[in-house]
Image (tube, rainbow, N blue to C red; front, top):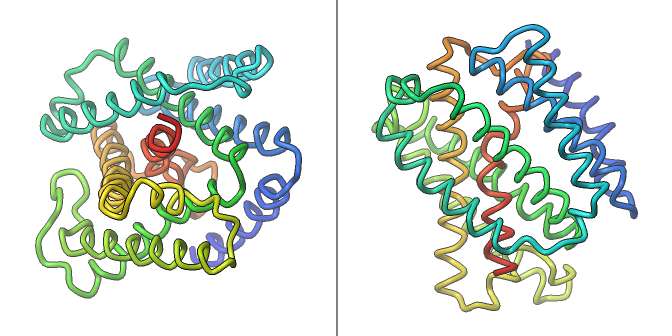
Amino acid sequence: MLKQRIITAVLMLAVLLPALFHDRIEAFAGLSLLLLAAAGWEWARLNGKHGGSAIAIGAALGGALMLAWWLGALDQTWRSLWLVTGAFWVLLSAVALARGMSGWSSWPVALRLPVGLFLLGCAWLAMVQARQIGLSFLLSVFLLVWMADVAAYFGGKRFGKHKLAPSVSPGKSWEGAISGLVGVLLLAAIWVWADHAGWGDQGSLYTRLWTTGPWLATIAVLFLTTMSVVGDLIESLVKRSAGVKDSSQLLPGHGGVLDRVDALLPVLPLAMMLVTV
């Protein structure tokens, strides 16, 4: 299993890194579009669609994003969209987690399916526009999510005693979540210090937030970190409701695309909201 995970990770990095670091946006936009279309297919399957219908839904999402790209969506400012999407994520998270699996299952597929596809589309647009802002900015958003996850894992393993959401994700603990928050705050502090010391390009999420003042920046980082945990919990809730362990097996050893990007889905538009509004 470990060998399979490593091989898949190496292959993913071999494809992702050249696109991520390329001077032109097209490579990264195209690759991320394919990944989000695959996530659309997984989302359809998690909501009861199978076979050709799930593939058609994923393809339709990819086609809609491609059309938006062709119509110039990447060149537009989407401040209102980030505000609406950010508010919707907060509301959805509060309601869905409070209602639990039974509450989620009671919502009609005709509502769940398009809402999820809309949020996936917003995440793609936010991701590509974040890359347009700058590589440092996008990487700082990615690393916020990764640090929250890694620090929560080790903190939970070492100190975890109190379950965070036992019916949704039994492995998560309050101690792990707090460790994730501390880890991200340390990452943000080091990144801001490095930028001001001349080691960075001043373009990271953390340095941009710092310009609003230390207290507001700290609150914003804690908020984004919390929402990364929420994104993970929401996907766990959906998977448990659907009776599956992984969103798919597209990435051997890692599950599906949704399993890899779940925490990023709320964080990307919220990060764009914080720096553009």
